[in-house]
Image (cartoon, rainbow, N blue to C red; front, top):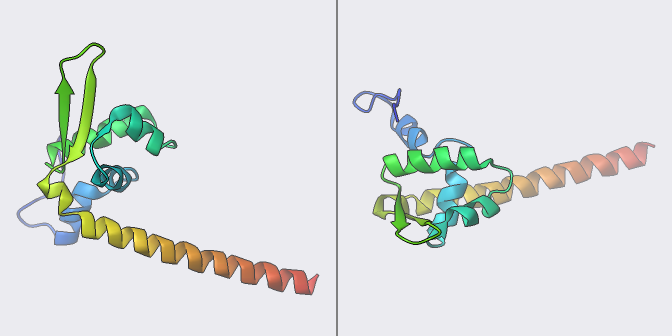
Length: 123
């Protein structure tokens, strides 16, 4: 897939985001860090993503060497995906994203509860 990112002169954060950026890529990487998965499993684990979007994101991750695709000569055909060594190197980043997301959700829920309490006192 053609990329617009300039690997020679671009920012390092930009380089990272060009590989793992996108709504579904971090989720797919996270799921695959748990072990090899079939396409149908990945679709179930990302129910809000379309099959087409998952396919596109998987192809980009494969092209960047983050995941590998294994096709088995069976009927019906079976395809499985897993993270590569390069993909496993993303584990601390994905874990940091999980931790940040957990803290952010907790803070937002707390803020919303405080607003609801304040509104109920004013009513």
